[in-house]
Image (cartoon, rainbow, N blue to C red; front, side, top):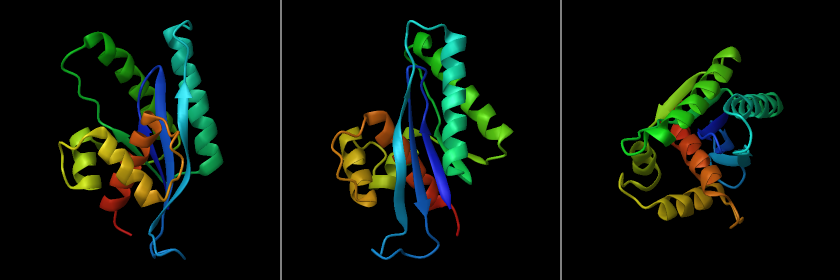
Amino acid sequence: MIILGIDPGTATTGYGFIEKYSFKNKKGKPLKCVDFGIIQTSPTVSAPDRLKKLHNDLNFLIKKYRPEVLAIERVYFFKNLKTAMPVSQAKGVILLTAAKKKIPVYEFTPMEVKKIIVNYGWAEKKLVQKKVKSLLRLKDDKIKDDAADALAVAICCARLLKD
């Protein structure tokens, strides 16, 4: 099963594709990283065009990897409405894209992700990223924070889904 994890944002949306095996693969691991990265938009472009780019890039990735499930970080903002609105718009585009492709969506709070990845809901971001790299056997130290967060969300979903 291919799972697409998403860390939503307007300027930067992280994505990560993992494959969950119903059995352990040759290396004895039930998860494998397929791809990860970010979808970046320019702040000089209008909001509608940024959302359109997000939609188009996400469509391309979905066609390429054909995920069976999409897992997304549930966004909670209490401090900055100015940031919350664009992120919520991006999340809406992501949810619409998944719905049009008939991909089931699972949502997780950052605390839920941390609890499932490192067994501690208040864990620091760097610890979660280190665990993600370990679980997926990633050697790339240049992985962007948003992509690592997206992979964490995908792993969280994989651990909660039944085979």
